[in-house]
Length: 128
Ligand code: ASC
Image (cartoon, rainbow, N blue to C red; front, side, top):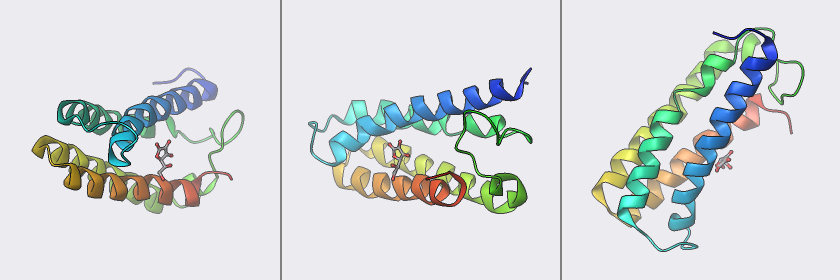
């Protein structure tokens, strides 16, 4: 899928950047910084759900060097990394389902759990 290690690194970082942008739009509504718009929440959550499937193809072996904060544990503890990725994907799927209900409290709860799952993986597998 990738010609060079740096292509894989660039791909996964780009996917995470776009995912974060759409996740952040829901976060602004969850925290009250932006007015709640159920359609905006639903559209952004659907994008996050789709985008959550993308970054992991970029974690090919030999891509822990260069412009990346990826820790070697990604490859030495692959089962744990995959479990963390799947946990995040499950939580953002729940967020998309919550957003479809149009209920702000459900969105807030699901957003919090999804954010925790992002953070948990970053804490274990990302530098700093
Ligand atoms: C984001 C983003 C993350 C997560 C994390 C949640 O929007 O870029 O890495 O949410 O901060 O705790």
